[in-house]
Image 1 (spheres, rainbow, N blue to C red):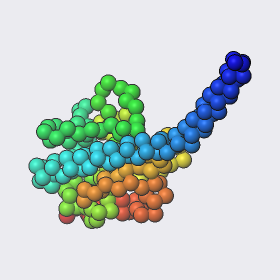
Image 2: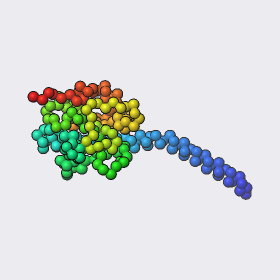
Image 3: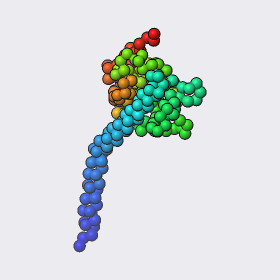
Image 4: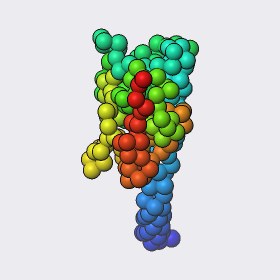
Length: 198
C-alpha cells in the first residue's frame, strides 16, 4: 500500500471540496445579506407603523393636535408619544443602526411642520410624510422642516435599507421609497402642504 499516494489523493480531494464550498459561499452570501437587510427593513416599517399609530392615538386624546417637537425641556416628541401610550411599547431604533448611547435616542424624524397642528389642517394626508428615517442615534426631538436631501452621503438614512428608506404618512400608511422615487412622488409643496389656519 502506497501511503504517500493515498494522502496525496485525499489532500487534492479535500482542497477541491474546500474550494467548491468557498465558491458556493461567495455566490450565496450576497443573497443572505439582502435577505437579512430585507428583514431589517420590514422590522423598521413595523416600528414606523407603531409610531404613526401612537401619533394617531395622541391626536385622539389631544383634540386632533399632533405632538409638539418637545415639551420645552428634555423630552422630545418620541418620549412624549411613548408616555401617551404606556401600554404600547414603541421602538425608536432602526434595526439597521447600532446604538452608540445609553441615553434615549431616535433613528426617526418627525415632520416639524406638523408639530402642534390640527390633523384637519393637513390637505392631503395620504401624500404628507409625518415620520421617516432620520439620523442614526439622533435626539428624541429629531425633526426636519423640509425634505431631506443628503442622498449623496453613503451613510445617509435615505439609503439605510438597500438604498431605500421608510416613511410614515399622515393617513397612517407606511411606504418604502428610494431618494429619487421620493422626489418623483413628492415634493416640498406636497410633503409639508398644510391648509392655512383660520
